[in-house]
Amino acid sequence: MSNLTETATQIRRDIVRMVHAVQSGHPGGSLGCTEFFTALYFKIMKHNPDFKMDGAGEDVFFLSNGHISPVFYSSLARSGYFPIQELNTFRKLNSRLQGHPTTHEHLPGVRVASGSLGQGMSVAIGAALAKKLNKDDNTVYSLHGDGELEEGQNWEAIMFAGSKHVDNLIATIDWNGQQIDGPTKEVMALDNLHSKFEAFNWTVMEMDGNDMDAVVAGLEKAKTLTGKGKPVVILMRTIMGKGIDFMEGSHEWHGIAPNDEQLKKALAQLPETLGDY
Image (cartoon, rainbow, N blue to C red; front, side):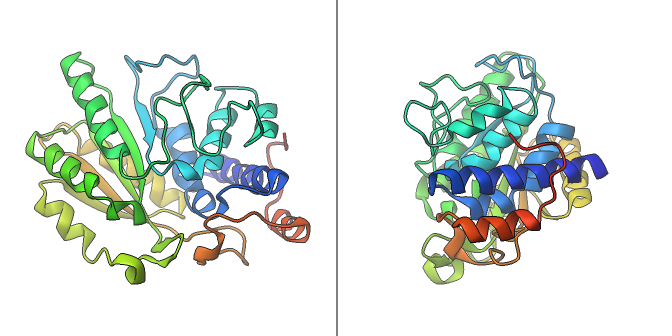
């Protein structure tokens, strides 16, 4: 897993540099989900950087919690969807790399505008059903924030997927216990997510989202559970701000950028492995 770990380290460097450069963005959740994106795009998912919007004949991914776009953009660039140097344009005027992913800029790898929380589950289910209708046996992957589950549309979609046996879908919940206003248990407690998804007829897994071996093994196991009549959900425990000691575990880094001194400290903890953009 050494190559994957090196890639994850470089993606973390990209995240903090992108957000710092424009003093805007969401580093906390991006850093916490870096192992997931690295494993998905560099190991697990069958995908083609020669991008086709319909995703026919390949696995597809939907990011529902679109504010963590820095980790998404870095993963796409470093897996060949667009030039790595384009990361320099993050959140700038007329950039294809807006703060929340959009489709009208036609950025390769982005199939849906996201950032209006709670909608990604419905989109992923629709894509999974389309694959079934088209006799396409590939898998639909999606990622959702735990705080995002406070949006009611999720639960209608979750009920639908279980009821209609959408078993070519693997949805992952970034279960870091933090959201913009504080810990999720204080804002609106999620309680027993495992039991909730099981009650809606999903196959439920849990994994450590900041251990690369565990993430790869978890995603590989999830793939073996598809096609058995139930959608699959992975409850992924992560630490917001993972990899940078002064950011870890704090909701305060949900949506603020490091200053110059903080960037210097962060990069000192993240050795350059693949080359900065």
